Length: 416
Image (cartoon, rainbow, N blue to C red; front, side):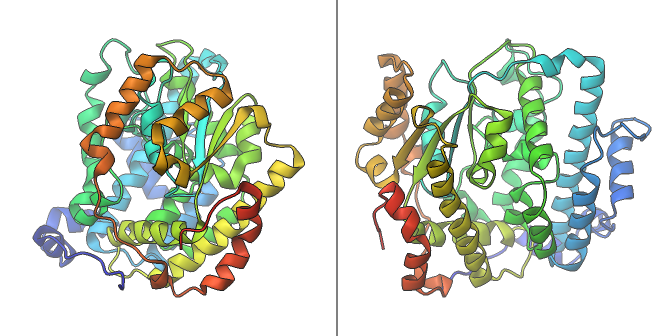
């Protein structure tokens, strides 16, 4: 099997050929920081100033990204249009957060109490585990629309009726309209639990940009950057989201936290972790297929093998570092649950129960019944995602050696 992007819908082909003038006119605008900042401010009727967008630590990564969008990403017309909407939305939310913080400085006193953070390499079961934890009434997950548009704080009495649900639906589902095969790999929707890397993206220090685009200069920049501003933004978003509801117990999820566990735990020192594990060779095939498909939304040039090499190096480093963190005592065993994909597949509800037991959390029968219903529902059995390690062009023996220490440390079985 060789990975290929799916056929383009007629509207996408027409737009990419310049046949939709309103869209192509927007797409023709250059990615230039000053213009993007002015556009975001104008949309919100605010005169740009030194503190309009909060702290200034996002300017450098925004500049790196803008150059990469123009020089490296090979964006289609539709890709440029979508990317401009994405960046202007991020800047607009930064503007709203800064204004809200000035109007209500007490928001930063909101306590984020013992969040439960699900992480692990992508495609290791983090999404289904997150969905099951979202069924626990004692926990609160951030929904898609909340992370995309957190200001003003949601009204607990009318969450489902918030107009931001409809506002965010197009942005969250648009990629699947451009590349329908994406929907078979990962589900998207405004009311679904959302990965919290969307909050990190507001600082323009996030792997979300790397997932969507071929931006090697940004990859290099991010590798040497301090992740703290992104996690400070992450915390502010949660504080705003709970401002009207009072303290809650958050459950969060993103594989990207693997790359910044010391920073995550510095910002949330009482956090509990659920770390999922799977054969890295199975992970590489699956995640590369996902990222290649996601990039095909924005570009007709997708280098599948290069994506595979990038993830082999990224997770070779981060999973080896995970062993270092455990050995150095960064991961308190009483607050960290390690779950293996094979065990979850064999007995998913049993694996969830083991998590609750290990962390000392109550697991009422009603919660278990709700989680069982999710496992028995159609969403848990949606399929269609096909991938193969052989497509990556990597040497399986070399990759086994790369990940051997990690697999031994966490007793992760081979699947390949």
